[in-house]
Image (cartoon, rainbow, N blue to C red; front, top):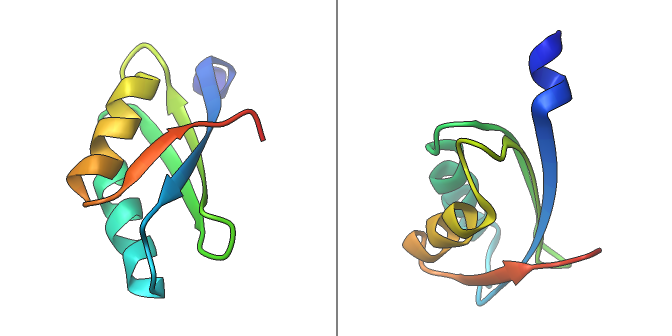
Length: 78
């Protein structure tokens, strides 16, 4: 599968969600983006892991999608 080679793994830290249903909102918004292949939101830590094609969905696009869901986020190294 050559598409996986082009995949980028990005970590974001999200703030402001207080319930497990918030996780679904964030996953849904990120999943709508063209180029996003997989999203995992870790409720307890606020960590958001996204596998995506960086040429189709930039980190800024990912942060904007989280904002559209109603939460703030920023890129994280871990």
